[in-house]
Length: 262
Image (cartoon, rainbow, N blue to C red; front, side):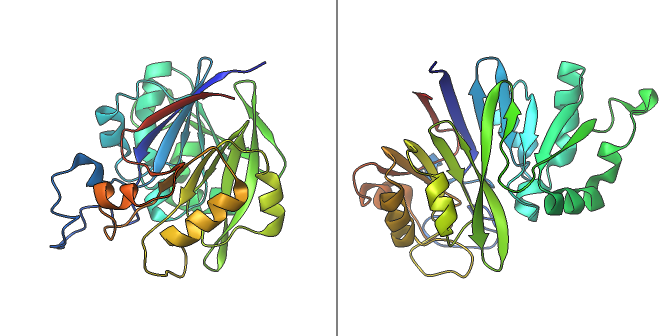
């Protein structure tokens, strides 16, 4: 049975954000709101479930700006700072729901997150329940699927420089940020995807991220009906570079929401 799925881009920028600190380039001084890019994160909603992918340093601002009123679970792609450092702001969603939040990640990511935010996973203390997150570790093991709100999530291993990170497939959607190479086995996991979100940092080659041209090539191989690029640096101006993309390819932007049947 098909279900309606909504994905909202909370952030679509690279690790430095756009505008960058102390930069005078055209993108960093652009008045087009689509060129204002916070660190990369999305909320995926289906039925009565809302899942946050990554907790960026701007999580509080993203949630306020984009009117994120509830979160039921968190899923992590990896433990780089631009993807985890807003974790403490999850406590507000605990306060709204009155419940702990499940946090899904692989063992490497859980270890790194615990070093920074171990207090968020300790036994609840009624006296401090409003002042720190109340989180429950859920382990992603290899490419084993896991379930959130009755829907199956499938991990998709991706190469990110010298490390491995996770993308995720939810029905006919795939979210694959922070990668410069998709392993052959992972291309197989992406067969039949209709809506794809994919890393596309800039035009200049980079050691840990796809260029726009590389992302287009990978996107064509995957063959999604619509592909949205994220983790975008200040080398791309939205109006100019989005217009130059092939049909079916788009630059995402903060606040963009897409909806389809999965």
